[in-house]
Image (cartoon, rainbow, N blue to C red; front, side, top):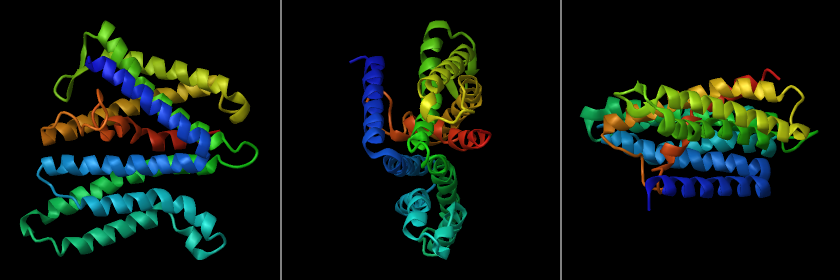
Length: 285
């Protein structure tokens, strides 16, 4: 089966899973989807770091990463009105640093302790800390008068980020001539990037118009389109960062979980930088 066909089918399956999960489970389903993305991305990040000569604490990172995503969502609901409810992402990240620092003392290979600690903390900061902004978006916009707004914004961030990839791929295949980063990612072109940005802006405007009844008045099609541009651009940057990590590990794909695409990190890479950017943009409305 041609790679492009595999990629298309995998993309359709992934979107079907996302839409189904969000439709039936709402905000809670969105948060658990973020937690799953975090765990799988960290697992593949760990493999890439090992390929680079580092040995992060993979299992510890996944456990702490899941806590950084889930605890700020559930704790205020389970411990409302108590001091524990004030525990936030910074507290959990600090806890992760403390645990990793204690754990490094027991590392048998004394020649690699600094690299192990650095890779572990980088993984915590680069994946769950950034993905936690998805939870902030969902939590900030879940409740009266529209209980689905948080889920819709979560979906919009994914659309603005990932459809830029699709637009860039198709535009690059049709018109691409000028290489963007020949050393980091030889297949990316400036024409493809422009096509991706335009695709993201147009789809975002259509999204805002389609769901205007469930979205704040300030989230107009124009605002959505203009906001999509920096989000899509950061998605391209995040994709290039993953390419740098993969090249350092001398690995083409982060995994083989998804036919035609690669691993979960190959899917979530463009979302890492876009989640906090979207959160900040949405605070404007």
